[in-house]
Length: 481
Ligand SMILES: Nc1nc2c(c(=O)[nH]1)N[C@H]1C(S)=C(S)[C@@H](COP(=O)(O)O)O[C@H]1N2
Ligand SMILES: [Mo]
Image (tube, rainbow, N blue to C red; front, side, top):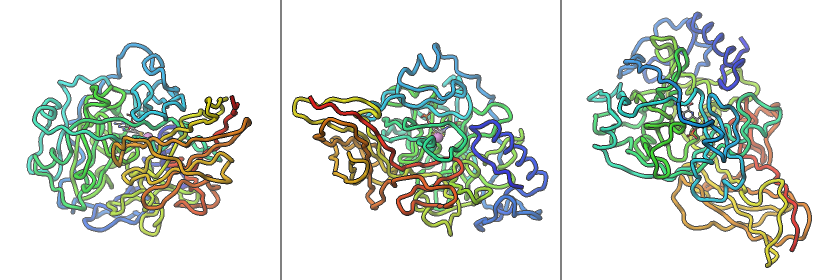
């Protein structure tokens, strides 16, 4: 059993994954151990054999079946994806996957929707807002179907600036290459998100919001037979600052970004920000174990939470599954593999991008003989503290300055560095540091190192190519005027 469940981007990997999962299910070994209340399951999927006693010993209803909404048809918006989003480079037209094509996207505070990356596992659904509702299930005093209309009318409205980045951003720089969409730098954007605080909804319907509880958000777009896109968010985070968003940059949420309602998890990687939300389930664990492996119609709720979006070094066959964890900061998880063997991709690691001059560009100094290097930096739900620029391929580093305004912890910050170069070819780097003193590393490690966290200035190569923050050489050709 050497096959490893993995990201479904690659159809052959996906087939292998499904085959393996069916095999494990037949052997009765998929995650069964973790249903026992209170015990943190440490078993990998292959080590939980013989557990025939798995029952709902948890204190809440874990039943994975509610009224399944009909699978929506795919979007019918006019024009091709490229026509609708001229600022994007298309990786796949269906499902829609596209990243910012130009470095210039990283010179502005707010990313226009035409330049904002799109990442879908399944095609964008066509949804009639009037027909859409969110089922609240599990540990609520009152389980209900919440219509979008009620959500908009009867709940408070709030706004957050949040830099949303796909955890696969920078995957294409991994050597050796890993499967999946080959994102370069462009799978990140900064937007203003408006909607209802998740806390208001949970409180109104009497959810158990104690620490240690989890809220699992499910997407309603999976075609028949496909796994439900589900992410389990720890209750502390859900109550703190998460939003059920219905507007992006002051406009109704576009279909491709989750219309009519998506989860926004400020500071956390894109994969947590579930689009087309149609169910929120509250219980005392993540989606985990038998009941969540197979719903009535044979699809799992666990794939995108337990198998995908995990940091898996070369030596591991599969991600170890946990029923619950209590360290959420992704880098903290990566730094303590004795506690969580394969980090869950939650909050974003500190990162920066140079927006101007573009890589590979020829650029002239202004009349003053200077070039203003501009870019963006962010640090998930931590703050970004400093950005340094090197114009000599990493030999020396200079401080960049931040521009105002500061739109809060979860937004990116714009930076600039005034550079006085001679004519010639240069390799630039930018490198950001967060308020915990954590800095972007210089390279991605070799797989044989089997790193689990950032060590010796190396980012850990991992099987699905997640969270890459290593800074990349940025060549520019300068002419002094
Ligand atoms: N329902 C659902 N939600 C989803 C996804 C998905 O495929 N289905 N993709 C996730 C991933 S991996 C990312 S990076 C972000 C992308 O959000 P965007 O397309 O609005 O940029 O959405 C997340 N939410
Ligand atoms: Mo993603």
